[in-house]
Amino acid sequence: MTRTPIKNGTVVSPTGRHEVDVLIEGEKILALLERGKSESLNITADKVVDATGKYVVPGGIDVHTHMELPFGGTAAVDTFETGTIAAAWGGVTTIVDMALQRYGENVHEGLAEWHRKAGGNCAVDYAFHQIIGGVDEQSLKDMTYLVDHEGVTSFKLFMAYPGVFYSDDGQILRAMQTASENGSTIMMHAENGIAIDVLVQQHIARGETDPKYHSYSRPSLFEGEATNRAIVLSKVAGNVPLYIVHMSASEALNALAEARHEGLNVFGETCPQYLYMTLEDHLARPGFEGAKFVCSPPIRSKHDTHDHHGDLWKGLRMNELAVVSTDHCPFCYKDQKELGLGNFSKIPNGMGGVEHRMELIYQGVVLGELTLERWVETCCTTPARMFGMYPQKGVIAPGSDADILVWDPNKKTKIGINDKHHMNMDHSSWEGTVIDGKVDTVLSRGMIVIENDKYLGRKGHGKFIKRGLCQYLN
Ligand code: DUC
Ligand code: ZN
Ligand code: ZN
Image (tube, rainbow, N blue to C red; front, side, top):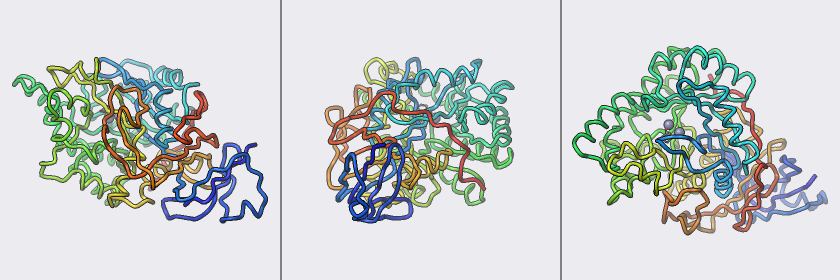
């Protein structure tokens, strides 16, 4: 078996920083060694990674991606191959993608289709949540089968997108009751889709068709209302674990914080776009450029009564928000975003970001929004525990998978289509952004996949990870 020591770096965990070396054997972490110990023990190494002046952290885990998702009359452009290569470039060693079942479709077939897409194609490890777009007797039974036999232990439901993925409150309650029996987690897209559709039609009827009306038609109050409703339903269903995805709004965060204060098993996730982007600076760009930033929930206004960015960063610091994911759902500008020229409601919803989450949230450390430890916790460790992959993933400890990111705080990263950009989109959502740090070396189960600005990975190296239940329950 190959032996790879990572020497002279600072190992960062959610609880602190340690000046130790990491010894990897094969696919696993064998030991953490005091400085100099590998020399005194005479450990033979096949390769040494020198991490002098660098941080050594668990590989990033992005628990919310949509590779190849058919959506908005088209499909997300990253395949599992291109998307996981981009993930590796961004220091991400595990993704959890959303397998799809729509109304009238069979859950097992939806999951099998996702295995066909991903199997043999991934550069890093992957797991699945299951979208349930049609809650009925059969899909409820199938949920329990997936938990018991398939290592799929979380289900995404939608309070938005009527006629596409939408579940009504009765369906949501029934899915939550099923989850409360089988131990799984309900992930919720919390926006009031029925009310949103009314506003969308009214904007279009008034000739307000530019991308910025996407945000005006989805007010933050609707996200707050839906979040609160989801929480109430989860409480009635027996305090079922509820994970609110891609939170963008202070109103929603307030509802979440109150529920957590009450001791409910309710958790929240946000994404970099909601921490940095604004309606005015992105969605309202001249011409049709704002279409690049159409995603749901939408990017919020900086002139709202709430300071959404400030509140979300604070929520991350205070563990009201537990996780940062990306909701990676990439579409090209040409021919895909352009489907919505003259009608914002036809713009495919989504942004690509799987490559940049570790970078963008590290920039939050530089800006004083988060500690280095909390960066690791929200991007690596908590995602693993939230979705039943700990301690195989999310931690640098003996016996864990050797998924490791060596991060250089002394170099810079310029993001952009002609700079750092490995996703399949024809543009970068983060064009021109400069990060005060850089992905240096990335290992996926002991294999170096990124080193010296080169991708050294292999299609098919990434394995499917069967997951357990949420590891944070009361
Ligand atoms: N939101 C998006 O922006 N894209 C994919 C699905 C979703 O909920
Ligand atoms: Zn969603
Ligand atoms: Zn999503």
